[in-house]
Image 1 (cartoon, helix red, strand yellow):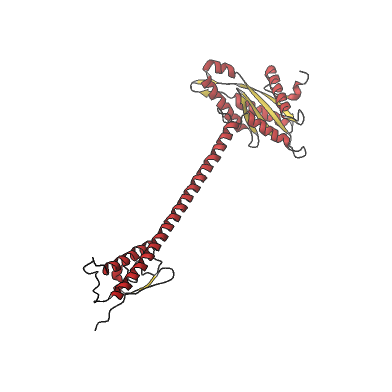
Image 2: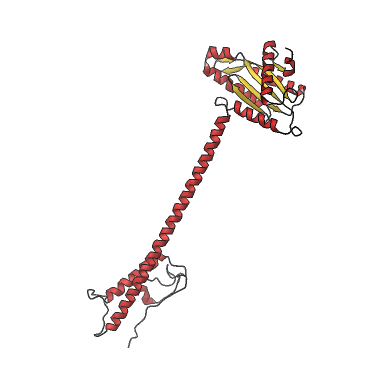
Length: 307
């Protein structure tokens, strides 16, 4: 007499399939070595499908409306067998519902994580954009749009910061004020477009002529200023002023035009001439006008005393 075979599926605690009997493969379980028999944790989606398939197969096997290969051939009076199968179907139904709920919960968590990651990435992007925007706005607020040099506000800020250093730590420094003689005539004769190009070329020359620790600024119009740190002697400042004079005076070619301007430079020193920002700028400006009147090229504030 043939002994009926029983389907066996052995699982580990983490959901990995450890053993599948041959007849259990017909219920949808893969043999060992297959996708669900490799000893790896089986995805919950697969368990939902398998439990649902087993539940449906058992329900069909005891249903009066089912006929064919899935119908159990029960002897007369086998109500206890049918009842046991139905209890198993009910238990599998509950398990199936639990697995579906767990699957839905995991999907919900995955969506929440995805949404959180998306929100975080967006926040980082917005923060980076805000910082970049703030940096751009500050740059535009402190730089001249035409020449890209620091503007009057930036020059004043740097000068105030230099003066704020305590006297024992503060280096001697000087403010040089420059004005371009002949620029107005060129601007009137050839238009603002040519004048703007000329200012851009002069600005680039001045920037290349000073050291990295110094600052050159366009104050407005054809007026520029330099903040020079650590040049304490008149000899050093004379050399710098003469160099700036030569650099700016060199002819400029714009298209078919050959143009030239001549700077007048005024020099005020700290602490010899003044120890406040406004006074230093004022004295450098006065020295510049003295150099212009006397056609000196450059002049020190001390030369203006009594003039």
